[in-house]
Amino acid sequence: MHKGKVKVSTFSATPRDLEMLEVVARYHGLNKSATLVSLVRKEFWRAFPGGTDKIRPDRGAKVEGTK
Image (cartoon, rainbow, N blue to C red; front, side, top):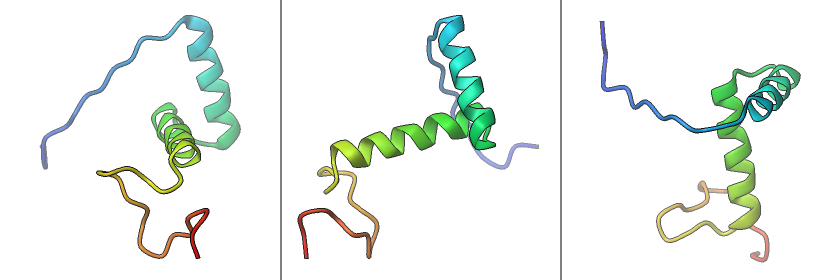
């Protein structure tokens, strides 16, 4: 029984890319979806340490360049 709507997201990748994803996921003990989300979060905060207009750092988060 569905408790809510499920959003299905897809992406295109080569067989080699998928194999690399599977290896990284196994290394970290995560599934492929969690691995992708983790990598995107890390890259987002690396590129935008102060967040964006719509995505703000969590309350209490240490943001580079601020006191």
